[in-house]
Image (cartoon, rainbow, N blue to C red):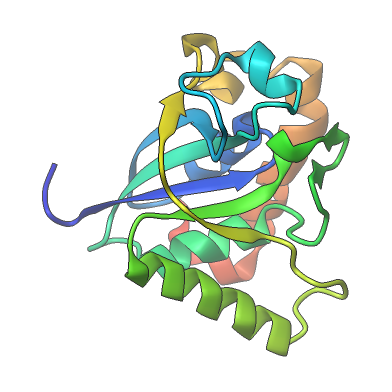
Length: 182
């Protein structure tokens, strides 16, 4: 990959949802579901679901910086989940569903912290933002059946009731309109 490709690691609840959102964004060249922020190496989905490993369901997003910036990736991230609920997104509850940004360098850390500070100052949300900005250590890819989940299972009840409305909301967001593929 070229030097224009950067990687972001974001956790915003169920990785099926986050993956489906970023598949709609111009400049995203690769997405992989997986796990970050935990205590044991190479955890399974079943282990992560217990909430005892410390991992969060995370997506690794590779994007072309000549098309979309890291700051814009974060705008999409914050506009497509609730960063004010601790360890929860909708009916998905537990530390594995926390809102987190795993930064890989000082630039990403500063951008994430600045974004949160600006949103707090502008009172974008009524409640405080609880998104954690954590140093990236390891990413463990999820089992294959999690990848491209929404595209392969869009008729499944979870996809219909959770992911489809999230994508509809994304497509109606005028601030992100220029970032969408469609």
